[in-house]
Figure 1 (cartoon, helix red, strand yellow):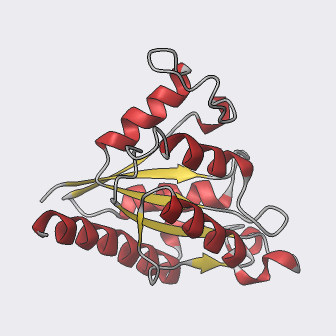
Figure 2 (figure 1 turned 90 degrees about the vertical axis):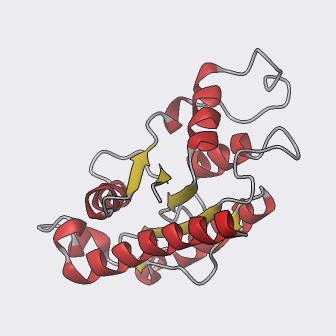
Length: 191
């Protein structure tokens, strides 16, 4: 069974360790899984019902919704911004949650992972932000895999000279996350 996983990266920074983690997921995915990183989250306007009108949805938001509808599962990469989910990721979730009752998540499996830089706030790998993202996605209609977690603290130091794909511990855990999403899709299809 071929599975398409849409990856959303909540960091826009060039060289972001969350972006690197997403790139690792693309490289580590088995042959029957395609992980696609959505490009363009920075270009999507903040969600506003006044601009979410049939046939007039901003092109960038419509592109996100089409990509989400074509996906079988979602993998969100969330850094921690002031102890919570970054605005760009929350905005994507908001756009994907609409239209009400028919949002793009549609009960599809979702996992939330991420890294944090390792300051006093980021010493736990961004768990607060990831918990907030799980809550938001669950309310938006995704089937959150609550027990699937990967939090990498101190990422600036840990990945200073090594890409996450070459960190054996992180690569093994990320491979397991992708496998669990694959299994979640298979379970949903069988139900």
